[in-house]
Amino acid sequence: MNSLGTYDYVVFLVYFLIVALYGWTVYRKKQAQKENSKDFFLAKDSLTWWAIGASLIASNISAEQFIGMSGSGFTMGLAIASYEWLAAATLIIVAIFFIPVYIKNKIYTMPQFLGQRYNSTVAMIMAIFWLLLYVVVNLTSILYLGALAINSISGINITACMYILSVFAVIITLGGMKVIGYTDVIQVFFLILGGLATTYLALELVSTHFGTTGVFNGLSLIKEKAVDHFQMVFHKEDAHYMDLPGLSVLIGGMWIVNLNYWGCNQYITQRALGADLKTARSGLLFAAFLKLLMPVIVVLPGIAAYVLYKEGYGDFHKAMLKDGSLNADSAYPVLLNLLPQGLKGLSFAALTAAIVASLAGKANSIATIFTLDVYKKVINKDADENKQVVVGRITVIVAMVLAIIIAPQLGIDKKGGFQFIQEYTGFVSPGIFAMFLLGFFWKRTTSNAALFATIGGFILSVLFKVLPSFANLEWLSPYGFSKLVEQKNGAMLYEIPFIDRMGFVFAICVIAMFIISKLENRNGINPKGLEVDRSMFKTNQSFAIGSLIVGGIIVALYSLFW
Image 1 (cartoon, one colour):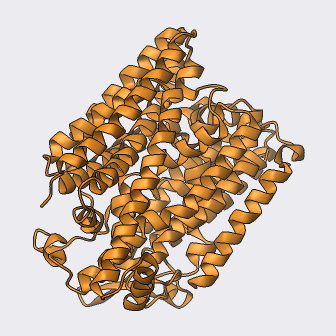
Image 2: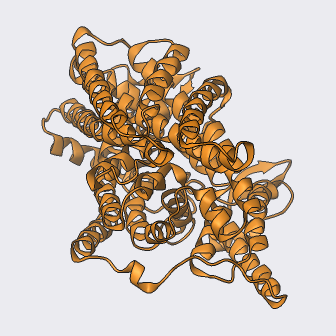
């Protein structure tokens, strides 16, 4: 039965009170000081390394991971963990090469970086672009998937779930980044504790179903019963090749996904921009270690659910159906409904913590970009610090209301929630990353080149998406860059995997930016460079050792499941 018991509500109430009271304490301490826009949006010089790392994970892990990635674990297995494990490596790269550039040049928002490096036109286009993306795709999908998950566990109406999540997130967000950062530490505690409890139960269920006991027996059994779910690289013949196309995951477009997300994304980098370099790097390293743990929490339960479904455990077959067909995104909620009272409340709190933390972080980033890069620069250039904070709070509420209105119309397709978000975010990732990368490390990159990457990158992504309907892409198949997906009107329809598509668009954007910049440099245009020198990229010994440990673990994991 999809409902919570008395003990579940008690556990959940304890979680809510701890977060609310701690958040209120942090807020009251902050109110005793004079608040300015830097405090509200960035928690300037207030977050410790462990708060930064925890906040990064809390903001990143949400319903699309708990529900969407578990669903992907159900359908395709451990390979989906590449998003998490390569993200750990990406965080190290961002800490070494990206964060020093931001901090050295006093960058607080991504549009500010673009305005400082290129011009106000590029900055404003991208500010609007990001606001639309964050509200229409990210905020709405987090809210919708979260509401679906909570509905399937508690039986509460989906609309009511959206209202409850929104109100909870708004209360935290209105306190500013410092409140978000420190309450995220508690959110991550519940997220990991509750997530591990669910993984433990899932493996125990598998173990007892086959007449044994113990988590490690359960792990051995799911590896034995779902051999095809424990491979990290798919071949072209595999049904899931379009989602994770072979070696492109390790050496191609997957890096664009991760580097753009972790290094060029206001939603993420905002946690570190208010700290000094050493603190920011330590926070990112801590987040990298936590990232290595995430597949245990979100992917393994999905694989265990697949084995239980295949073996016909209980009413798994019925519970996994939606409108008469199998719905992989139901895997995690179905598992949670099997938990005993109290433990179910803990896991429910973990899921809620992940959703609320992500909503709060995303809403704060939306408010930051709108207030500092749109309102302050276009609407009211004379706005004082207090006015900016007020506008930021109003923006949070407006963004959440829009998300509630848009979310039911989202129409997440049959790819599953996680893959849906990755693919549609991928329409803008290649151009943005090309623009940032050359903006960082090649001083001769011009504003028009950046404009091409901004607009041209998006147009190219759309063209590559619709290209199979107009052109025969069979010639790319021998190289692994296209796959037969359907036979349409007697003709073979070959499609490019979206990760490869991002790689192609990124390469074209970089080449085009190089050519445009070279031509403009000949005409005497002198681009604005950033302050960058080699000494910025040096790291201390403890960070270097930690990075090597993270890298070694990633190599070991891929070697184990190759």
